[in-house]
Image (cartoon, rainbow, N blue to C red; front, side, top):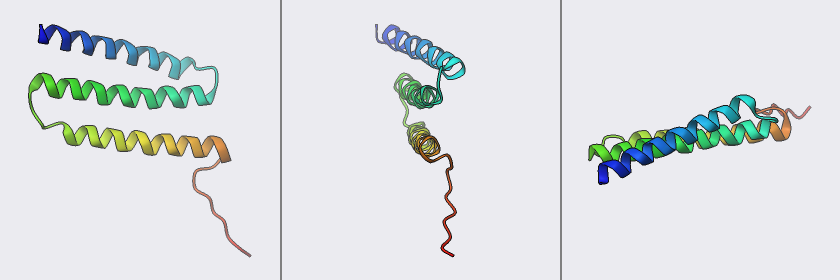
Length: 94
């Protein structure tokens, strides 16, 4: 029963990721694409966590942390780009 539930959850997360990928490609606006990209990162964390449970190991904990940090930094960078039009500001007082 446990194996069936884990397989079903992996399938549901994979379908969700595919739908987010469609939204990433087809999205009507740039903020929709950014949200879809962030959700794909969250789904990758979920897939890695379920795989970690199925394999009964702690080997992928660092991978989960790495994916979450990269997804957060990417979301912040995209949000700053959408707000100001640039990621790195070069303010020089003259």
